[in-house]
Length: 111
Image 1: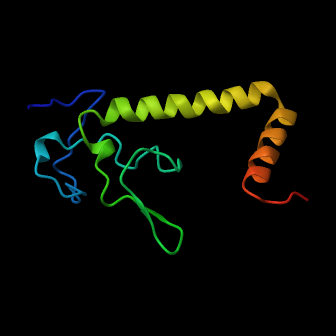
Image 2 (image 1 turned 180 degrees about the vertical axis):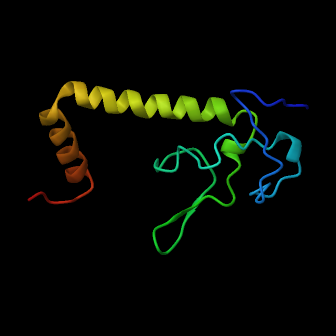
């Protein structure tokens, strides 16, 4: 499969870190999302571990670097932004209520 640089794909073979993840398909390695925009999501859909320090280690994750990674990332970002927008539209009282319900479900006592 030959993939050409575009708005959806960019292979930067000149980068001193290329490829930053082990791959048997360097021609399909997408550098577009060099730093994954899904890093902040607990449920990003990628292959990650959390280190003892609490840092998310994405060394084994290839999701943003595959040809289909672009669509995956845009879909997940849209879902997250829609949820944030819905929460904001509901107002601060609804957001506080939601957080309280989540805390109660998790057995956390409020102030």
